[in-house]
Image 1 (tube, rainbow, N blue to C red):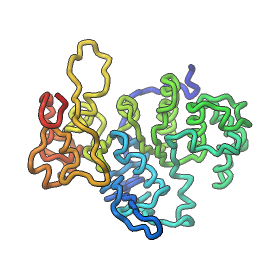
Image 2: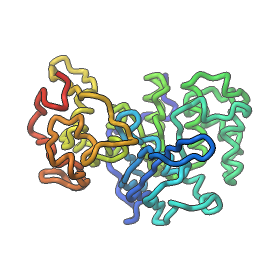
Image 3: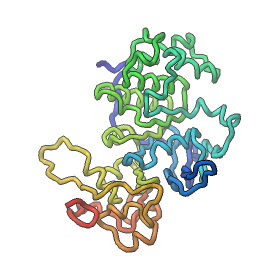
Image 4: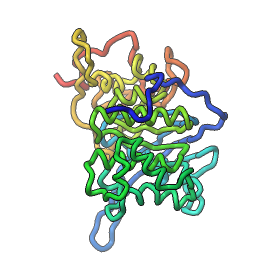
Length: 360
């Protein structure tokens, strides 16, 4: 399928130069615990699901930060906290230097058009009683956005850009497939002319050919309009292609963050190494065995003490159980490459097979 957005000059985007010293988005110690209550008439809290537990990162103007990790590690919850669809338990969210952590609806109203989200579930994110034209143009009307030529013309342009027929303007969501519904959600977010888009698995429901088209579209808009992205995904190849920096998340915490090349070429955290080793390679000469982690991800209701990855790590020692490793730059790492590990990987060595954290 022809890409209506035109070719992208470079498939590996260069890191944008921040226009200001203040990040567009700054997250400090962000935490979200969902209480667990027990009882019939008089419910009492008996615990909490620690979905996100002390997350720190920044996103500058025009930058794409990729957020990767296993299912259930807290990636989507982090995205919903950033867009203030969920109320944080503790921590701070700064947008353009302003604290919006506990801002009310009136305070958030001017920012809603600037911070948009592409949802993971294309079935639940669209109103089944509205036509596609109303779904995309409604937010423009609410926020007073008046495109040149009118909203209907702009909606038809957006539909064509994301690979849909402009004649779909008057159709309802139930008349589309899951991939087509996802493209409608992408068009809705782009129509608001945002500065920051939280993309939660934006292309996971699309065919491979359409994935390339949409990623090229998002990259072009990022370059031309300076849109920043918090790009949440499982596909490591897409994250590497799209993102400038990558953050690796495990059980509610970021265990490694750094420039794309540093993370993919010289990973320092054992979990990052395991993730990358599991990604398929189109190289017939690559006979390296993937790292098979033992067991399942521990429950976020009662996470392990110290390092949360220690129960599956082949390098775990007594110190890992008693002390939680801080996220900091370790010896030999590039500037801005942070790792939370007491015994980080040597980038010049391959991890050993076997050990307490590996399947036999």
